[in-house]
Length: 125
Image 1 (cartoon, rainbow, N blue to C red):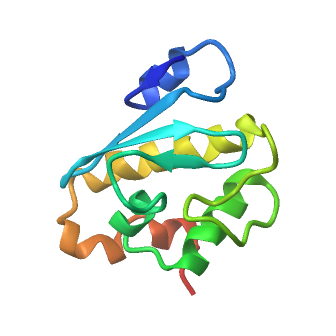
Image 2 (image 1 turned 135 degrees about the horizontal axis):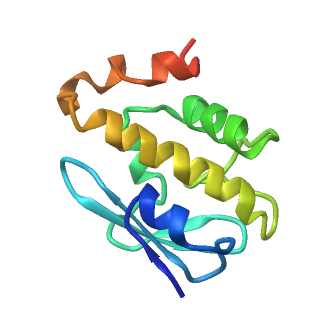
């Protein structure tokens, strides 16, 4: 079991993610703790697995578009967008993107998230 707190630690992992690895996303509001599962990640300190996407003000369609872009295949369900069984490489790409977005967000007021990097990612209509 690994505990990953940022992109640097993910880069140093030296192996693919696996079930029961822990991923932490530190936002301006809280730190969200996720556990890697076989087809999705579960958030343990929130009632919603998609809490990190809510932080970025993404609706369901935007969340799935971002996940589909990172996974490399269409996703349209899950609080945490479901990935193919044990497709941890796809999951890692989405986690990397979230860490990059969090780094970018560190200089943006949470109330102005809608005008953040998501425009660059071209996931908003």
